Image (tube, rainbow, N blue to C red; front, side, top):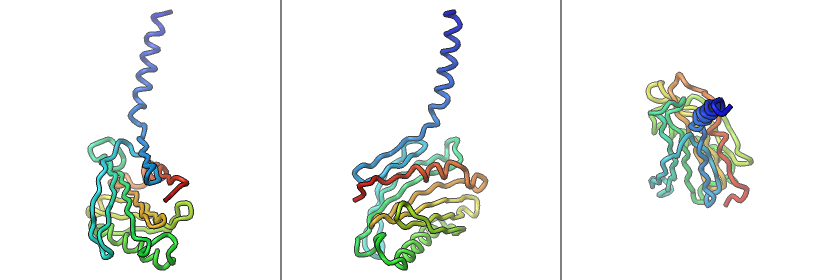
Length: 184
């Protein structure tokens, strides 16, 4: 009887270990007010960007999956705070439309891409856009979701090869984003 348990325990251990790598890591930024999950720990950086309204600090969480067995080559979250007097989710709808249009045009230009699709979206009551951009001569697809929460812009992105477009991990990543109730 004892001899039968050992192979069974080894089998259970092998099965458990084979699923261990598929667990996503949840990053929780309590001081900022959000959480999001990545396939593995993302790199965190900040970058000062010169804009028409002055310097903006971009906070970037980036998970490069290009050398891993993943349907997507990268997952990213970028957030930046804008001055309240420039833009907020309470601004006129036409201002918000212009803000998103400029952000989308800038994103496409930064990757020498072509905007394929833009759909109005919301997160809770906050305005947003869901975007699809073709880049790398049509070989890559970048899926993006942008939301304006008060005066903070959140941009989630998942990039893949054209042949892996619309894979389920894109939506899994986007759905993992959650704002806490006590948003500043």
